[in-house]
Image 1: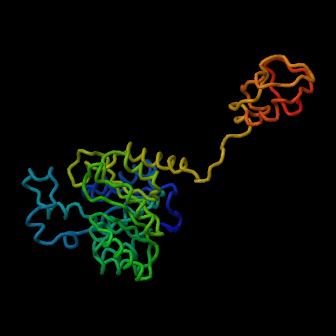
Image 2: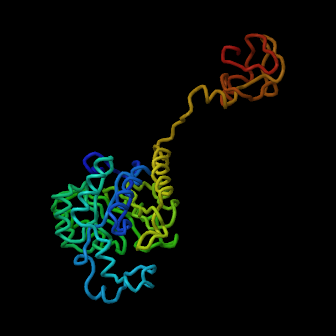
Image 3: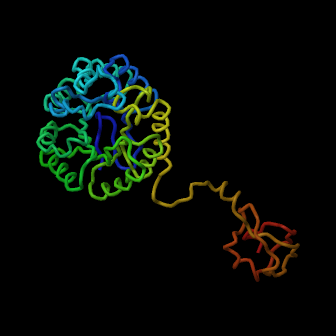
Length: 351
């Protein structure tokens, strides 16, 4: 099955993957840094940049703010920071998102954001004109929210971190029941970063077997190896956190790809997709290449016209422009039609 993102990019399993540079909150509340990230993502070859549309009111309850549970480790020693103040500082306003989308449109890269409330969904659809709506793993079991998003009739990209197969099935069914079948499902492990043995890339194949929808990969590993490996399994979309500096304070910088890594993911993923090719086995080499590498039947001694050719009279050498080794039955026991020098290639007309 194929679906279109942004009305122009069509994705399907084993296609050249659509690459989302997940900026999220890696702009750290700095609009100029956000713009630089967009430009760098475009230069690296990404197809899309994505932010996160949350506010202090739409992401955490008061209980979480009081506990500071989600406060990044590099904030904890700073007395002037609380989770509430960080969320407030790092959220992106509607006006800022429109400004960022304008820049993305100008330089030719898709731009979207993950909504965390119905109000944010409405803004993305009605004002930002988002190419698709991304559902975060945390909302996969938020079925009333999925129903609301699905009824917007926009393409939906949904991450499956934190979820059981039953929960994934119910989420997809909820979206389908709302009349929306423009779905891309992302295998995801919501650990930052997961150990390699926790990634379970073969889940991509499981999802491909269970659903007709295109299957992608939302990656939280370190480096480029794992997302590139997902392409070999047919991942049609890769979402990777993106930063310009892994040492910056914040939730995601340490697990994000830098410019060089994102460039490698973008370029090498397309190369891998090309190299996968077709399941049909056919020789790609032309006749000239085949003849140069294969062998012909050749004489091991001079053979006179009319003389019968025995097995001891032949050998097999390059190039393969004469009778092939598989055609030995047409040679042994037959008479030469002309004099053949030692080490001569034997052709059908010679016997």
